Image (tube, rainbow, N blue to C red; front, side, top):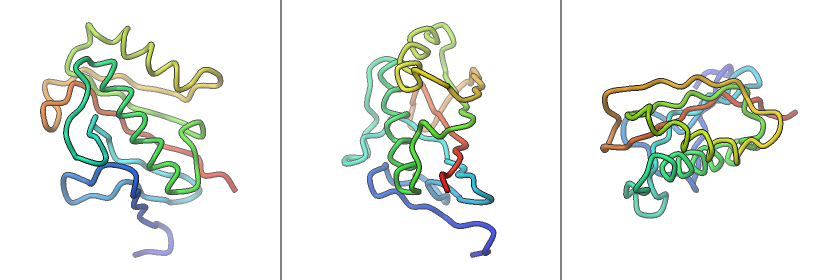
Length: 130
């Protein structure tokens, strides 16, 4: 592993579904892999609605941040992928509850499909506190 980048494994986040790590630390930033709404204990997809799934995605990202010594509140940019943009108002409401003040930059992208049939996936770039 290069001294310029360090992988982060988060014991409280769901196991990766492929050949990737939960996050990579580089240059004072944490680049978090996308999280779909998996229960970290069972690996099962959870949430009957896009809003519920978004909440689980954000909880999983919070666990990744914690493993790196940061919080989701340290996020500088998130990308939200959804298979149903018509449900984005509900997703946005849940998202807002995680960032009540000083929210990060964000991109929202409608996609045709996500892994395991999820309706939502979220990734993040997070500033790591000194």
